[in-house]
Structures are given as structure tokens and as C-alpha cells.
Image 1 (tube, rainbow, N blue to C red):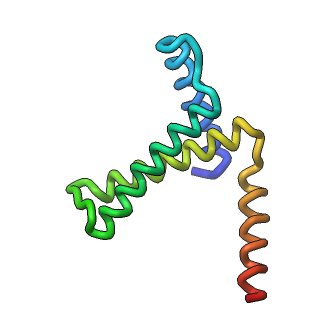
Image 2: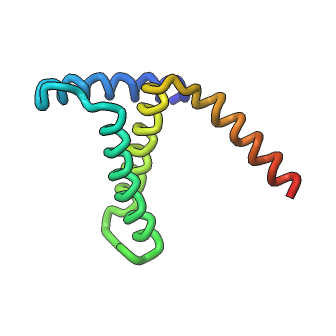
Image 3: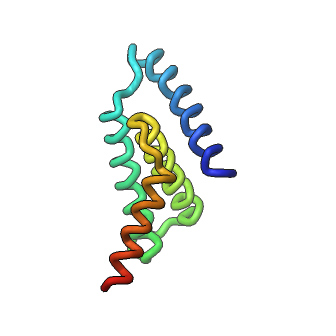
Length: 105
């Protein structure tokens, strides 16, 4: 799947979630609430990283890690869409800056 397709799929899923949220809670989540959900996902990811280090073993560790990384990516894509951030451009310029800083060091 190409990056633009991933972005579109994330938008589609967010739209569907917004419909469920509106039906369930009377409104869809704000960007702040999406961010709080992302923080929860990052916490879950941290526990799975501990699992990979042997601290929190579980039988489905690799599957759970892949799932949580995908959840986190969805949140990043969703937040970038909400704030009109060009992730491809931002990623490229950030990597260029880091590359330059590492080359100077």
C-alpha cells in the first residue's frame, strides 16, 4: 500500500469512528480526545516493547506489537489530517535536518 493510500484509509476509518461516536456519545471525538487515545496506545506499545525485552512476555507478542504500531500510525495519520500537516514533506525535511546534524557531528 502506498503512503497516500494509507492516509486515505486512515481518513475513511476516522470518518466511520466519528459516526459511531456521534451515535454513542452525541458527538465525535475532538482532536484532544484522539490525542489522549494515542497516548494510551503509546503506553500499550511501551508494554509490548518491554515484552520484547523479556520483561512482559506474552504468547502473541509479535502480533500485538504489530497491531499497536499500526494503531499508533493511524493516530499520527489522523492527527496530521486534522491539522493539515504534510507528513511526507515534514518527514523528508526532518530526516534531512537529522542527516545534516549527524554529518556535522
